[in-house]
Length: 161
Image: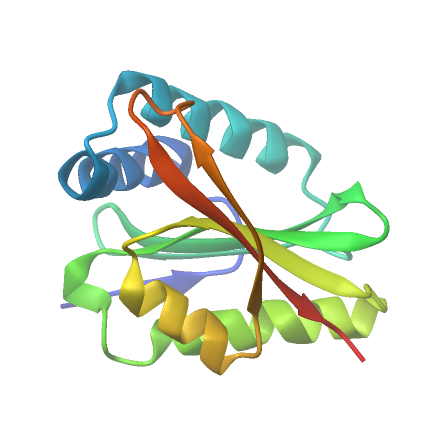
C-alpha cells in the first residue's frame, strides 16, 4: 500500500474521514446518517478554525484518506479533545495509531494543557487498550441514544504532569 502521511487538510479529507467513520460504526454499532453528518459537520468546523500552533491534525491517504487523528485545543483552555482517531483495517497493527497518539499527547504537553480527553464507545476493545497503554483512564460512562441506538459512551482522560 502506497500511503502518504499528511499533517494538514488535503482535498477530500472531510468527506473521506466522515465516510470511514460511517462505514466503521455502521458495522460495529449500527450507526446511520445522523452519525456521518455529525462527524462531517464537526470535523469541518474544526478544520475551518484549525490553528497549527495549537491544534494537531494528521491523516494517512492513498487515493483517499484511510486514517486520521486530531487534537482540538480550541474548545476549552483547560483541556484538549482527542477526536476523529480512526484507521482503516488495512493500516491497523503497524504502529501508526500508537505514533499518532503519542504525537497528540506530546502536543498537549508542549502547550501545557493539563488534560487530554476523548469519548469512545464500549466494545471498542483494541482502541481502549491503546488508550490505556498511553495512560488514559475511564472517567465517566453514560448510556446515550444520540446515534440512533442506545450505546455506552466512555470519557477517557489523561492528566498531563
